[in-house]
Length: 446
Image (cartoon, rainbow, N blue to C red):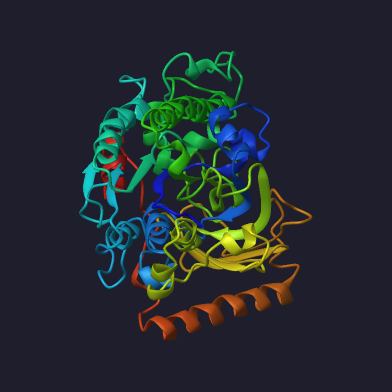
């Protein structure tokens, strides 16, 4: 593709569900600047994070490997990434790239030349949370420094705005909500606070006495609008530095977010669509078509192979082991879809795994979970896209078939990797909980 090395701006937004972005059809105009980016690039309509939550998501995103190869199946990983598998910045370094990462340190996601952190956790009393502005404060100098080096650059940005707490600054905080969040007689928040493992955490960043759950959904959307405006500042600086015509931009997420669905309130556990479905947008001036929307299924492990292919590093693409596939052939119309079904797993508050096809989603609990949900769940995604009717008891043959596909894939990958099934190395129990903001922050640190 390119005749000279392309820069890479990798915008990896934590907890961003695709269906709350206006470019994915959401009713609110939450992401106008990202929408404009998508209109000038390629948007994949069915991109998924198959391995929940953060640690397995970013591990696949940065290595091009699936959860069986990385072994990173849980938020509470037992160690850093295996050094035998190169990360994206390590691969790029061999080809003259300089790299920077904002939002992680180098103790876990290794390979970047420079790392920078920023403040992203505040309580209700300390609001607002200027997460994206704090990110810009460290990302812009890093971008400028790398641009001045004369080397091709990779800048990886982990935005935290859609991750709770949702406390965007004015005027974004009231952009989508004009009512009183403390409405007498409104009982919609009762189930949220009745769930004891998360109740203290939610109270620490929500309005005191809140009764209206729609306020919190609107607060999530406000975070998207605020972050989107701050991303525009990054994109403007890319243009000012003369990099825009020679930079590949990717927008994606490690996983989605469950809001007022399925009892998994304002978090990213559960194997339902709001948590699995993420955005994936590529913009590459003069090299990729503009305004294309492609229906193909993609997983996070497809991103590294695709990036290497897009920037012309096909030798690296062939010499490094990946489980994902380059999406370039699909964009260029010379390839077939790489998958139509895939393995799914989660291991933070509930330990589950299963299989997703275009029609069916099956998953089963490997131990009792703290939501007391049914041990086996099956949904017809065509007839029941909101996943409200568990058909496991009504469709035992479908359950047996999909469980067989799940275990066949697991057994195949265990044999191919020579590693144990990582999810079996954990025992979660039902006593887990989130306490203070500080406790939640510590869980996320990598």
